[in-house]
Length: 258
Image 1 (cartoon, one colour):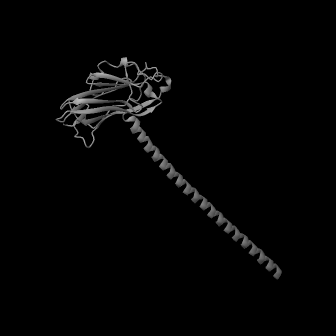
Image 2 (cartoon, helix red, strand yellow):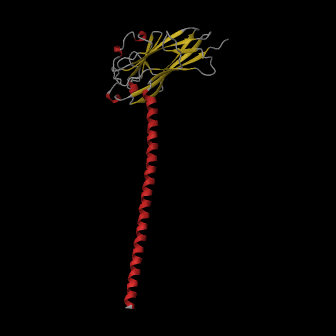
Image 3 (cartoon, rainbow, N blue to C red):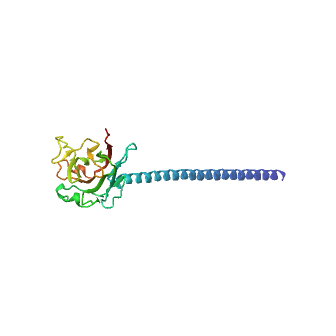
C-alpha cells in the first residue's frame, strides 16, 4: 500500500515536471514569436522609412528636372556685373516697358521638323514677347540704354543641354533691328556652314556678337526664332525624341572715357 502511494507520488511529480516543462516551452515559444513579430515590425518600419526617403528623393528629382526641362527651353538674361553702372534695361513689351532681368519663352511640348520657309515673313513684327507658332519658338524683346553715355554690349546664346544630337538640325534665327542672321551647326560631313547660315561658334555657344556704339536712349529690338530644319542633311530619324536647351545673355560693356 505504501509502495503504491510512493509510486503514485512519483507519477504525479513526473506529470508536474512535464506540465512545468510544457509551460516553460510554451513561454519560450511565445517569447520567440513576440521577438519575431517585433523584428518584423522593426524591419517594416525601416523599410517604410527607406521608401519614404526614396519617394522624397524622386519627387525632388522630378521637380528639378521639370524646372530644367519644362519651364522654359529658351530664356534671355540681362547680365550686369556688380562693377558696371547698369545702363541697360530689358523688356518684352515696347508699350509697357516693364523691365526684367530674365525673360522666358513659352514651352512647346512637341516640335517636329519644318522648313524655315514656312515661318511667317513678318515674324519679326508679328508681336512682342512670346509668339510661338506650330513647331517653332519665337520671342521678341527690347534692350534700351538708360545711361547718358554710349556703351557696347555683347549678346551670346549658350547651349545648356543637348539630347540625341538634335543640335545637328536646329536653326536659330536672330533678328536685330530687322536684320536677320540664321545660325546652324556646321555640316557633319563637310564641316562647312549649312546653306544661308552662320556656323555655331563652338560646341557650347550658338553665337557671340558685340553690339558697338549703343548710344544713350537707343533701343534695340531682338526677335529669336528656333526650329528644327527638315531640309538639313543631318535631320534624320536618329534625332527623334531629342531636346535642346539654350539661353541668351546680354552683357554690357562700358567704354572707357579718355
